[in-house]
Length: 201
Image 1 (cartoon, rainbow, N blue to C red):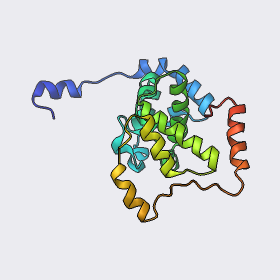
Image 2 (image 1 turned 90 degrees about the vertical axis):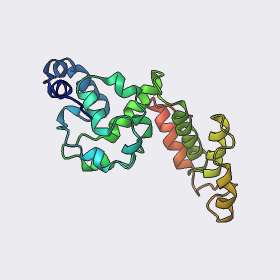
Image 3 (image 1 turned 180 degrees about the vertical axis):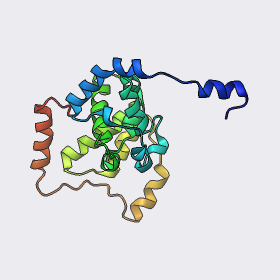
Image 4 (image 1 turned 135 degrees about the horizontal axis):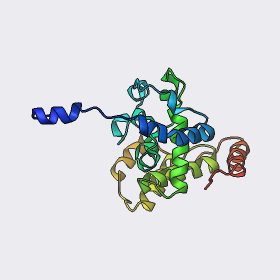
């Protein structure tokens, strides 16, 4: 909260972003080419953030990530936890009146951050990898296997262990994984992603 007149003056001081916007044009063009969405179209209405179900846990909201990219501050966006918390539910993209597609940006930024070793939280990256491994193997997620592997590999073996018996007795988790009928198609999707240069575990 602003406490005195000097703080109010500093807060109200005008900041000229025009030079920064001009310098950031190559970055915006690159994003448009690689991710197929133009951050320059965003006018910061905030509808993406208002509809995001996990915005409360992010260090930058989806609107702020887009703003960072508009200003060419891509490294800041790549280092943020936000890109790893995004559930890719597409609510932001659906609500955007300018068709910016923040969800597509988040996915691209995740891949780029991982390639550059800028993963803000290694546990989020581990969870993401384990989740994809299970989907490739069984065609769906095996929740109990995911929890056990994640807790063991993230050095917190007893985390949430107290919830296990109750969930098991209520049939909420199963110790054995289920495989979908034709898992070959799912495996083909993963193989295709690898052929296109994507990362697969």
